[in-house]
Length: 337
Image 1 (cartoon, rainbow, N blue to C red):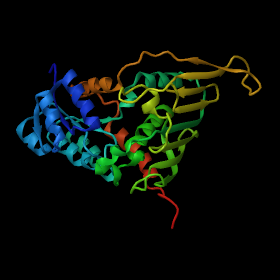
Image 2: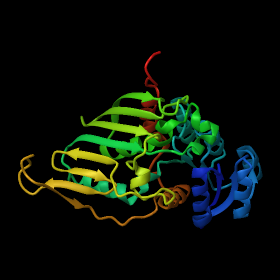
Image 3: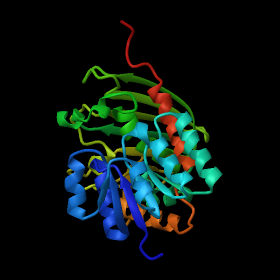
Image 4: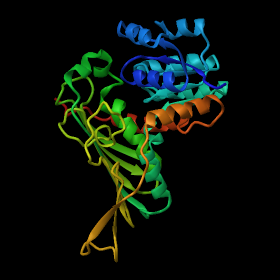
């Protein structure tokens, strides 16, 4: 198998990026999306368009499928593929509930068919460099972690009704990426406390949340998330990972250790030349990294998974990140009235 045949379920914002990668790195064989907009997308790539996954799989057998549909559709569509023996790259969150995540994990194990969960940031060389520094004990023992997702989503972003209802909101859509990275870099999260608010947009789900975390190592973490703040402090704006967002040279995560502190994605490592003391001057050095497209790296990895490689982010890993994020979703949306 040189170039596997790939079908992409969903031609929206994220699905379009997968469609592009499938066309460049593999053989895009089908798009599944019932929307009128998908007609133009399929025509542009000269590829078959189906209204439902069932129609697609009844007509062709892809070597792999990317599931990039709304969150509440992930489980049924992924399981349909797995039961047909087709490996799946499923966008995050892998499901909207733990029950459905468990169904995906069980189907993957039962059919011995791999799942790669689309936490693409783990594939980013910036994160690989940060993890290497942590594993080399450059930070010492991690004590505290802080992160932000602050940006302003335009009003027309919410024209898609599913983005305003249960299973959406910046916690499930965005924070899940951040939580997955913190687990990857700092270890398992064993306790979560949170507060949510819908005061800015007044929707069914939060527009803002504040999170406290305890890691298995004993480190403590805090995270602030909002899609209604005019600010640059988010991975989307600071990493330069996705060219559709303006890039701002700031950081959005800070990891503090007993030997040094690290900010990400600018990869500034802060240390003392002499004794560790607030009386002494602290300085920073930039960890060097060759930047690359994390989406492209993830898709290449998916091709390797189709050919037999173990997924970097398995269904079980995706389930663990979802479990931590759902603790935030389950927190109080606002003061009682």
